[in-house]
Amino acid sequence: MSREQGRKIVAQNRKARHDYHVDETFEAGLALTGTEVKSLRRGRASLVDGYAVVRDGEVWLQNVHIPEYTEGTWTNHEPRRSRKLLLHRDEIDRLIGRTKDAGVTVVPLSLYFKDGKAKVEIALARGKRAYDKRQAIAKRDAQREMDRARRVRARGE
Image (tube, rainbow, N blue to C red; front, side, top):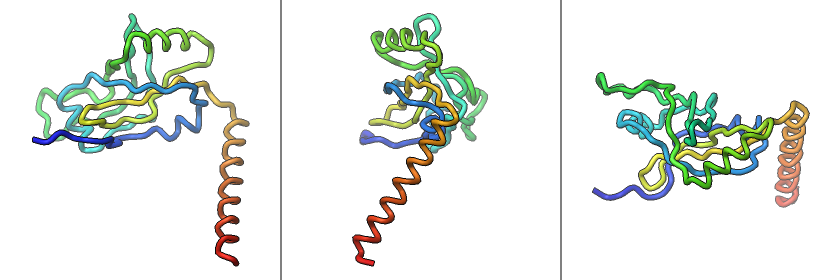
């Protein structure tokens, strides 16, 4: 049996980049059960309400929804259970130090398979205010208009 290569994205949290300023990102492994892996391989997961907490020197992913595996038996998992993140000690220490600051949280950005192993990209993030969100939307719209005008001009119209 050949090994999987590359990166296959299962779920992304686009809302996180809209709601937070992303300061620093980390790639972490996940401690999963067999039915969770099978459900993820079908491309089913939701990171929308997810966040990570540090408890007793370990990082736990909370509120991430991985639906039950339909062919699973009594060994099936709970969809919103806490899942342990696998990080190096210096990364955990950095997370502990930074999350003590007011307004800093750890949010999952994407869930994917990298060379056959389930990984999650987490970020140290700081919440945006309403005017920051409006500015980001205005900036994106202005960039879109400039790109559109550039394409029209390049065509010679």
